[in-house]
Amino acid sequence: MRILLLCHSFNSLTQRLHVDLRQAGHEVSVELDVHDDLTREAIALFSPDLVIAPFLKRPIPADVWCRTLCLIVHPGIRGDRGPNALDWAILEGEATWGVTLIDARKEMDAGPVWAWREFPMRTARKSSLYRHEVTEAAMGCVFDAVGRMERGEGPVMPANWGRGRERPACRKSNRALDPAHHSADEALRVIHASDGEPGASLTISGQPFLVFDAEAAEGLSGPPGTLVGRSRQAVAIAFREGALWIGHLRRAEPRSLKLPVLRLLGAEADALPIMAGPESCRYLEEDGVGFVDFRFYNGAMSVEDCEIFRQAIITAKARPLPVLVLRGDADCWSNGIHLSIIESADSAADESWRNINAMNDLVREIIETNDRLVIAAVLGNAGAGGVFLSLAADEVWMRDGVILNPHYKDMGNLYGSEYWTYLLPARIGEDRARRVTQARLPMGINEALELGLAVRRLPGDVDAADRELRRVAVELKASPDLAGQIAAKRQRRARDEAAKPLAAYREEELRRMRRSFYGFDPSYHVARFNFIRKTPKSRTPVTLAIHRADESAHHCSGRRRRK
Image: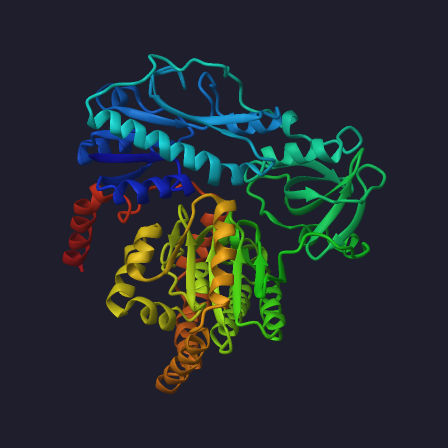
């Protein structure tokens, strides 16, 4: 089938649909919802059999859904209507929730139902529920509907009715925190419901902020609203009962930056007592296998994060264990350098340079681990430098459902570093490496396995994936040919170093990166600004909008003729 994905942005769910529908043999194109006329134009150019809207912020034009079947992915149970379905489900403590696939109609979320799925709710951030339960339910719904279409069947229900109800948009008051009124558990629910966007509002030391990235601060308390202590970049804040660790804040003003708490609270937070709190990275041992567990909010890694990670690997290398597993968070493995901190710096160029060098130091530490096998356990999505960070390991074990974006160019045609010019061709060959980086498309596990970017499939369920990961890692530790594998790895690295030193790859990559950071072309700085400030797109990249490929080629040839 010809399927058009119409979306506000190319978010994680849309990427998963793009990957899995293409894998299933469908012809898939993407149109960002920029303007109704562009949507109409996309329909005319592509002539889709089906339009799927995984993530929209406004209605589809009536003349579009009247002529072409348009199915809306609604992150709510049957009968639920309104723009903040998942937010309300978290706020109201729903035990089960779901996804409903609804035929577009004039009345929002009221049309015929083509499929639905329900799932038990976890105590988790909205973004985590969206990346896991909502995404898996949406995939099931979409493939159910596609199957019905292929069999010539219609919707399963004539209208969206069920135990859900219509609810308004969440108001600011629904997301406001009052430490004197809320317990820590109640506040955590509000923060979870507001995670990602728009954040929960909280006054800290007389200043209004939006709060993100919270977890319970076990055993801590104090007068409501007071700052109790700090742990690395997080700060503990007391509520009516208990306290919460807060990892990230935004100033309560338009287009402000989401940053680690200590960067916004300044001297008052710096003076707080240091306490045991959230750990972004830690080393542990299980059944004779070393694990470095890490979690960086939204996968962004600052200079400090890279150094913490590197020191954890150094700690691991001091232990005489033959297998080391780098076990990333299931919400996000890594997306490379920390663009928000770079954007907030006095010199974005200088901070970019420091950050990419810190990433390179981390990657080199992994590459030069020659006395054991290193496994990258990619349990969450990865992009840009985060993908190449995983390739520094000897093997990549990847959870089913994870999406990789092994390219940099969407960030202002950035060349990239992290030794990718060594790691990627060594793993998949020069020609394939060139195609992957130029395609600028998301990739799922089947393609990653076929290319050789990953070598082992872990189950899609996060808990099952972790169990399988630990089982296979222990099995690998006991393998009779493990010593031979480590010896072969050491010899291969020595041959590669003799042919071309790692330092040469780094120097070549950084020469290109320096031009992006400090040169006359501002593309990287403009792209970073637009990405961090969530500037709406004005067009759909032709790499996604295959229906606009001829239009783009004609435009380029016209420019060449005019030169």
